[in-house]
Image (cartoon, rainbow, N blue to C red; front, side, top):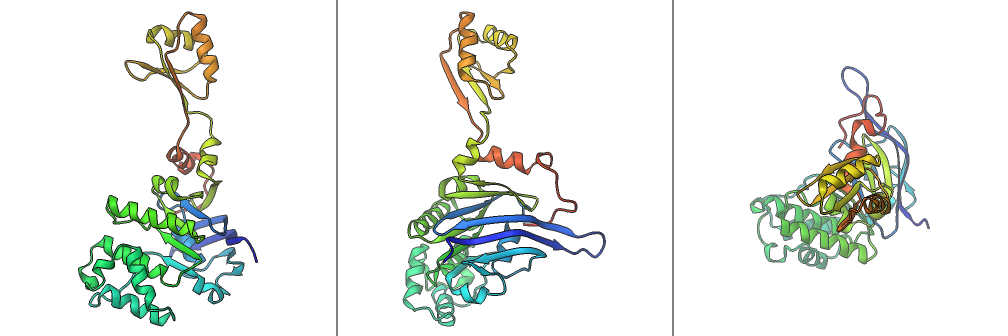
Length: 317
């Protein structure tokens, strides 16, 4: 039994246009998610996150490359593992004239799931007190919660969530994040597509940063941020003008950040900054190295200049 729940190799997806060449949504995408991981697909709209998920779930076919779930090739052997997978992709469809409880009961019966799971999942997503309400009266946030409940009915080993906090208020977002953490603690593998950096930082064990259909980087959030040099050093001294002149004379790029601090750009050695100033009798009161956060990493990797773009890339979600 493989320890990889999700695996793709050289995944490529092209969409044909009536005129012109193909639109490349995914380009040579490699992905590996281990058992029990909460893995984030992180990137802007059009990066290829939703396309990747749709291929994994058999909702779209790849132009080239391979994908597998639990070691079984997708889509050819997807039926073998479908019961082990729960997913929330796009806006889930429910019968608007039925109650939430009735909708879930029908799904449970169709999937051979115990009726007791209906109550458990309603409680799990915070809808226990709204189970008898008709879905047509649900808000967008409540429908999203109901979609989460439907994804959890089968007690899946893998849960795939595409932007699960869309439409939720801050309280709902916190609850969904807590639910994802609980799934991870229970040993469930989670693939979470999001453009919300705080979401990835707070709940994911690892992330893959996508841009223009490619994985630009993969690893834990601390690893990804730690690979980058400090964005700069914030320095507090008594005489800002004199200190700025001293640092510039030493070849450093300096800007006046506020009435109390200078900012030394690039990746200076904090010890060198302190030494250069001390040699001129200018003593540091505060020195704070600043590293880029995940948002900086994602923004830089998503910029067209960060890496050559595949010809015709665009249109992926």
